[in-house]
Length: 358
Image 1 (cartoon, rainbow, N blue to C red):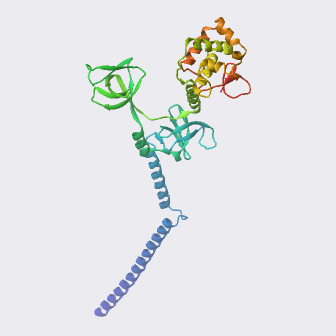
Image 2: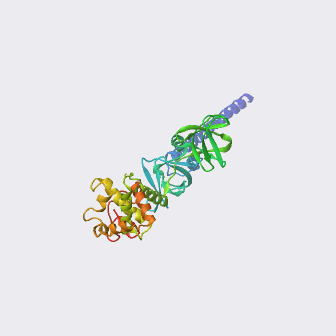
């Protein structure tokens, strides 16, 4: 009987073990299935951007951080350089339709004030405005270009400074600089001396009395452009035309004509009349003498009606007319190469006082 009970117990235990084993296999199978199912969902969430998940948000955040980091790194330097062949316009606002406020030229640079929507608000010299990023360089590219096109300028920090031929206080002095002078630096010779370009020669100045600044070409405002162009026009008009050798009588004759044509005008008006006569003398298209030009047929009315001769004979010629005559003979002009003038009215040209010259 005892033996039979032991057999039944062993058999029952075996049945229980088999049942538990089967249960464990089912649980393990279910757990494994859930694992692969969750893994499949995770993969689909990464591959399919339409599926929202914590992983996707993390990836998006990392992307934003990366982009912000790149922009921050680029903006660590506020230097900006112009990358054009000739010039580019600068606008009042960040738009091609906005008013033009100035011009940036090749190799110009400046400082970044603000950036948005593919535009950069920058300061370049006196010019402040918006420029398209399409034509600008930033970061390392800007720094490399600045190193290539910029130069070091020596600024004088004392009332006067001697320029010497050698880096020595006992060396010959061949120049004297004022407090507002600037020179292009060549190199640091040592702690005490800096070599500079002085009127095309190498000179040396004491490092103690100067400051060194890095210089990059700057843009121009519209007002500065107009001012420069007007100065250039005036310089061209006033460029010396070359002196003409004449006798004293010719000087008096020219002064007499000026007295008749512009006696009541300002000195500029008098000089302009004298310059027209002398331009004709030089031109080759008119007689090559003062008297020949003045008395040429059909030219100057006061010469034709005898008024010039009367003034010449009487000697009633103002000092300013003589001064203008001498200046014109010496090549001075304020009308360029003009060879005609008349009362101001319907003719285009350079108007001075009541007459127009062309």
